[in-house]
Image 1 (tube, helix red, strand yellow):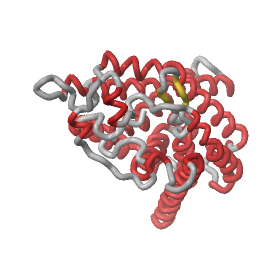
Image 2 (tube, rainbow, N blue to C red):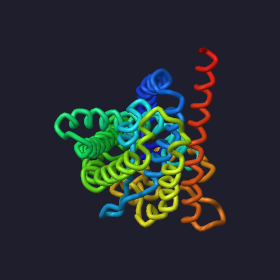
Image 3 (cartoon, one colour):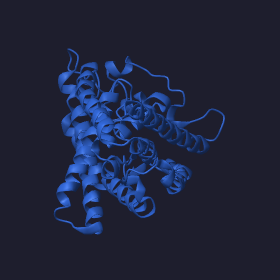
Image 4 (cartoon, helix red, strand yellow):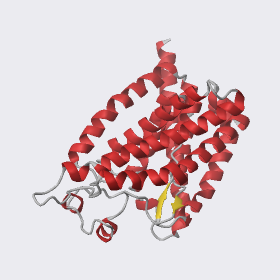
Length: 328
């Protein structure tokens, strides 16, 4: 679901960025106002969960892949505004450092995965809690909410892809950007997410939520980070060690193909806007390190990404704590 650069027109990217910025600004305001500094620092672990979850690619018959996002999981633990910021941080890091998702299309990716997914999943879960009661019902509601959230996010991405050939084409009618119309993009995205990828999000959400609720319940409370460091550290360590499992899925996610894959697909050509578009040179493209096996580079990338997420929000939490102390 990570939309690369040049799949969407600059106009579409601008619109999606404009739509995302106010929600991000509101999320920052809400988190600073409503969450204690101790809870803000926990956003680092939450962002690490999302970052690592997106590295576990799941195969689908036909050669494409997908992954969980974890937005609803974070929203259930820390609230939807915190989830918006945590997933956004993971997406920004992936785009800038690893080239996973575009720079120009970052607004669209944030809108889909950091706004639509966690908010839809969270509020769907809140409604479902009125039907499903108790701890087991809470888990069921959250799992179904995560399924709804990731599918609505996928639908948004499918629409963003599908409107490109209708809105942006040359005089001969050839698409300038994503060449697949809605009649192709919607079923291509939704079949996978309504089945395998949606299930992956449910399993990821249910498994980690159950673990946190039983082994690190302080994650959901206004307690200091040190009290939950050991169980969360173990969980994150296990996820990092297991990320090479994501390499077993062969193929590229639909809508994330390179130019050669576009040309050899049903499109039969490379749209001009894609061929001559923006190119970002990531420091560690595709989560790889030069000179070492790809699986090892994948583990090191996972460790680096998780560490950056946790350090970033720990620094933010410390800064907020110092400011509140100074203002008191």
